[in-house]
Image (tube, rainbow, N blue to C red; front, side, top):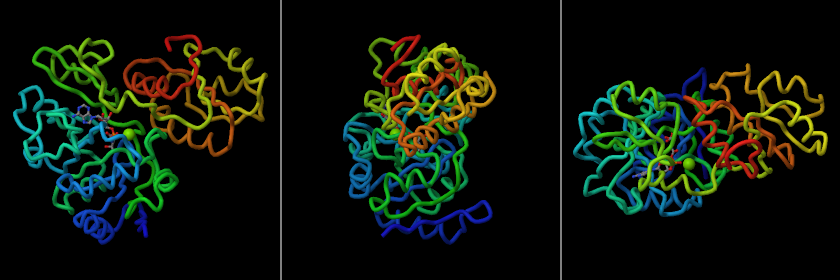
Length: 339
Ligand code: TXA
Ligand code: MG
């Protein structure tokens, strides 16, 4: 039996948040919105509950979970020995979509950390997430609330598509605003390594920390976040990514096969036949809509039953770096750029 608590007049009623918190306290698993994507929560200190998360998602056990807190005072429960730079970054970006990989407290279960001596922690900014964690009274571990390998959920409907019957409750807070998962970083004395790019960009981190910020793929010896090695964010259809695309290439590709959806900037879509399924990235050069809607578009294209999804690449800069990171991982073919 799964309870669905829906937003009315823009917010989920207090009593529903309390009911969801009761389920969590007793070791259940509850999906809830954050500003990035929906998460599937369980109390961080219950191995029984944590195992339910891995089972519901079909998640590999070597992929560690992020601990979500509702107040900085909860940080000491899970992590220790923060550097002044780490504190500065928390002050600047919490609550918000930044996950710091920190040295873990002894008591944190290896199920959370996949046996590592570090733990990922973030304080989300979505009011429902903050309320739910506070009402439960302990931090919540929460991976994205999708079946492993599928695009992350940005609406309650996406969560239900993947997990109905596998979880105890779902808090519906409408569409998430950021749309891509949090930036994951590890701070070293002389640099910051981005393990997963997100909407807290390299230049934002650099400005606060006054340290060089690099992507883990550019750094020898520092692995990406373990989760980044799996096939990810993938729709069922074949995704073909056009880097430095031009409309003619996309149009030529379409002419060969119309069982296709196209995700592209508005001016590219304008030049394509009317009977093609079109998903707009907005005005050329904009990035926010691409981040917010990418996963929803991939799911919608799949539900149309198309065989291929053609995606116009965007500039890999700032938030665009996070969008392109996900697209490269989802693509079965890249045209005009690195594989
Ligand atoms: O925005 C988000 O971060 C969402 C919402 C729900 O908060 N959560 C999310 O969780 O994306 P998940 O489990 O889908 O992705 C967590 C990522 C994985 O790539 C994982 O490998 C990495 O964070 N990660 C977690 N703990 C880590 C650690 N101790 N060291 C390195 N990477 C870690
Ligand atoms: Mg995920």
